[in-house]
Image 1 (cartoon, rainbow, N blue to C red):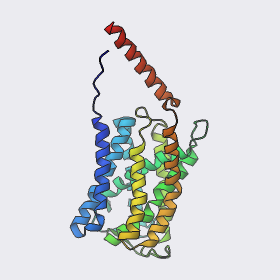
Image 2 (image 1 turned 45 degrees about the horizontal axis):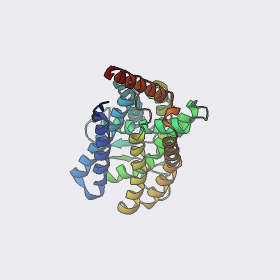
Image 3 (image 1 turned 30 degrees about the vertical axis):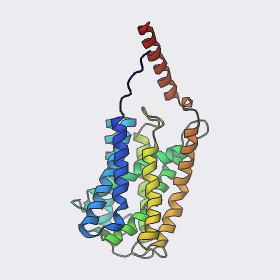
Image 4 (image 1 turned 120 degrees about the vertical axis):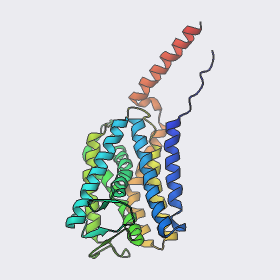
Amino acid sequence: MTRQPTTPDVPGRLVTGLVAAGVLTQISYPLTSGIALRVVTIVSVLLLTSAGVLHAALRWSAKHAAVLVLVAGGIGLLAETVGVHTGYPFGEYLYTDRLGPKLAGVPVLVPLAWSMIAYPALLLGRRLATRTDGSLSRVRTAMLGAVALASWDLFLDPQMIAQGAWRFADPSPGLPGVPGIPLTNFAGWLLVALVMVAALDRVLPNRPIHRTHWEWPAAAILTWTWLGSAVGNLVFFGRPWVAVYGGLVMGLTVLPYLLRLARASETPRLSDPGDKLEAMDDRRQTSARIGGQR
């Protein structure tokens, strides 16, 4: 029996390459300043957002990937537009010109950044909210995913305030050791994150259609965001309290998610109904080839 040639997984490799390029770009943060730092910020968001969108397209479809961007980016743009013009729900603030072109006073990059972390946060919420019988709790999915998404802002806002990307009119009261950011901002993030993850959970199918066990690229984005941001703030940026707050709060969801993902990878792959169907198809194709060669 002749062995069938293996077709290179070009789309999968592209996702891996985008994730790696996004991480490497962000690693250069401490080494850049001025215009170079601005470019690095924009490029890293574009790379990691593209990785997530392509990942969604490969696991579901291009249509679902477009829905992901429209829903997450649309909710993010709406929340930011309302925030810039009314002060709700984040507090009174404004964007400078450091993040590029604006739409309704909001940099176009910002809705993409929401989408960048909202997608892996949804996958985190779903995995942690899965019951022992395989069913999902939508409420737990939204809550756990929202905590993961909102906790990212414990890193993001101090970084962007330091870069001069935006500023608050009244940054008090705030977290001890984290100047320039009011507590209302974090509360607003949690509210918007809850709505965003709940909406994504409604519009995206519960189970992937393809590549059912290929969740690691999204998990890698979350893991890098958590650990890279904690180390960066502690070692390079001189913001130890940011590293403590963000590291602890984001770790409350990301660490259990990684443990659950690791345990799932150790279980037999045929426990998934989709994998059973794929295995049956493979056996049929193998039988057909053997029969044809006879």
